[in-house]
Image 1 (cartoon, one colour):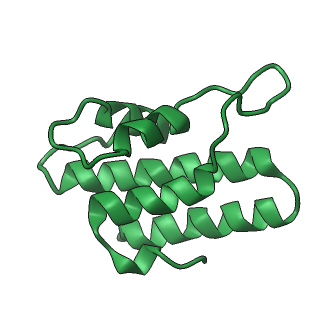
Image 2 (cartoon, one colour):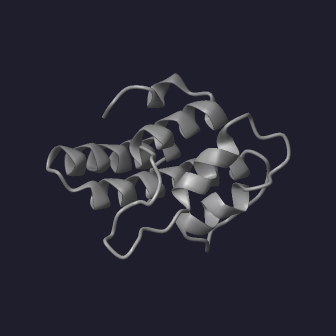
Image 3 (spheres, helix red, strand yellow):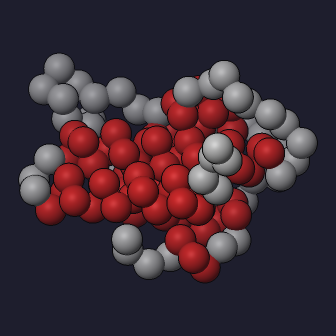
Length: 118
């Protein structure tokens, strides 16, 4: 069985993030956004000949940090995506990881298919 393409995996994660947020579950929305960012990171590296089959979404996103020639703003989004929650399970920074996952996909993969909400 063939694995779904990155767009399908990304869309599934973003749909789950939007649903979680609509239900007031921001923690789950963040988790889904981080997984979506991992899908983007995987596709970005794949397009550059780097395979990451045994890495987690978190590891893939971290691997992007310091990647040569990243567009402006990507490092900040990577920092947000890899920021740990505090003891109250809150993100200790002001960031919308769901919106940032969409921005990351548009910026790194230049794909209009990811710009709209799922």
